[in-house]
Image (cartoon, rainbow over all chains, first blue to last red; front, side, top):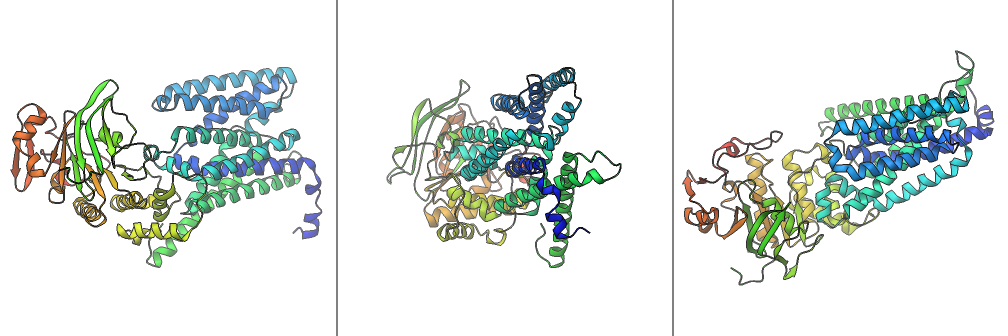
Length: 296
Length: 279
């Protein structure tokens, strides 16, 4: 068992890459967790996949022109978000069209990744775009990620009530004079940024872990909006820190040498958190059932 | 009619929807404290009319006045109870949070916990007798319970006019009677003008002060015994229909909607709703 002194003085805390990773995952995780509560409520989980899948194409392209991957994620994500907003209602009934457009973009992503390996001669690009490599993210991106996360939190504090009203019933909100379309647009913007921040930290394929996992556990654990958001953000932070800690420690784990990918560990922890949340609910219902009170 | 100043004055309203004339000359008034039923077969334009009163649609001709001023979207004097809200079963809201959105769900920012806010929500919950489940998660409530919360949500802003869209189509007989009784009480005791949309007049018959019957885009308003006659409805439909009274129920024979569209398959419905008789 490691005692406190060795823990505090561990080289873990003195590595700039580790701190960079902590900043990135925490800010992406917390922003996604907050946005996620509304995503879960509005039933838009699938949109998160679309945003990051298209974002991945942008990220693969960014390596070709050697700019920061975050710009690639974000620009293509915004494109996808705008597309969904514009087509919105018309596309909702057309799964096949959505699927085909998405496939086209992912095909484009495959081409870019293929070209990336030709140009830069590194196979790691594919890995880092799709599954993330948080220890090697350009530290210049970090302030942007923290900044966008803070901006998302502020935006949500300002939008809270009308957004909640819109999420429950858009027509009712409109009848009451809420600018539903404008609110929806701002929500989509925050959604895109949170999703692409997560994609940078976790990889395009695993970013949904941050977007959906903590939020899904949060809304099941609490009956109150504020608590659900708080729990969700807390679970995301725990997963980020624990995941990075384990990834750091895993260099000493068998089969020696390379360590385990951080995004795998974070995603695994989020999954465990969700299972724990479900068990807590069942246990709580059981206790209340015995007490003769209303079950959850 | 019209001696007192009406709360809502619908004047010869025509509304187009996708170039089709859906409402062509709807006119009626509602006084404070009046409980009015908006009745008509499916497709008669009931929802269109409701949306027009809410300011979501603009009439091509005619106008709607609320307290003698043209209506506008987002008027806090109008409370609106939509037909159905689709709530995620896990939505992290308690009944009282849901009701509180009716009070200030339009405002920006995060609500501050104020005593007056809490008390108004509490009063609204009490007036629909929903205190027992005020702290339960809304996603897990029954249709009748949610219906009451929706009414409380509309009431908490202290509207002068309450628009209630098809509240009875999702309820069983017992809940139907309770909701009707509650609405009548609110009209009588609080002086709220209520316009309730329904496709079946019968469960409402004894409670309503007035009926606005909508057919083929036009309206006929008055007391139920004035409106629901073969003569006046034939004039409205433009061809002979017959209004019959069978075992205390009013049946319109010959209206285009005689075989009623089966109620929403997901909703629990009483056998009554399946009869051949609707309007």
